[in-house]
Amino acid sequence: TVLTVLTLLTVLTLLTVLTLLTVLTLVVVVVTAIATVVASSGTAGSGLRARLLEGARQGRWLRPVLVANLVAQVVIVITGGVVRLTGSGLGCPDWPTCAAGSIAPVVHQAEGFHKYIEFGNRLLTGPVGILAVAALVAVLLLRPARPRLRLVAALPLVGVLAQAVIGGITV
Image (tube, rainbow, N blue to C red):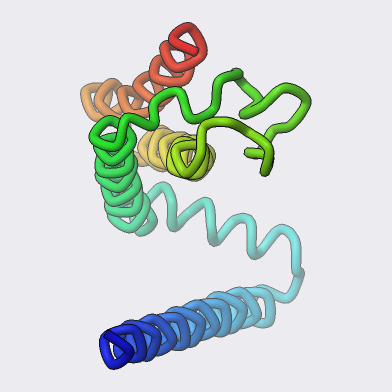
C-alpha cells in the first residue's frame, strides 16, 4: 500500500508539472503572438484590436472556442453525474451561497465531503458560462453571418442559465 501511495503521488506530481509547463508555454505563445501583432502594426491599440477582430470574422477563433466549450460542457456533465451518484446535490444547502454567510463551504458544515463535491460543480459554472458566451460571440462575429449557427451557439448559454435557475429553485 505504501508503494501504491508513492506511485500515485509521483503520477500526480508529474501531471501537475506537465500542466504547469503547458500553461507556461501557452502564456509564452500568446504573449509572443500579441507582441508580434503590436510590433508589426505600429500602434498598439488599433492594430491589435483590428487584427483580432479580423481573425474572429474569418473564423480563426471559432474552432478553438467551440472545442473548449464542448469540453467544458462535457466536464460539467461528468461532475454533475458525480454529484448525483454521491448524493451530494444538497451539499451546499443555500443558493447562491454554499453555507449561511459564506460563498464557499465551511468546516463546521454538517454535509461532510458532499459540500466539496457540490461546491466544485458550482465552481465550474463560471468557466462554462464564460466559454458559452465566448462561443456565441465567436459565431456572432463570423462573416458571412450564419443565422442557424447563431441559434445553435446560443443554446449552451441558455442551458447554463437555465441550470443555474433550476439549481437555485431546488436548493
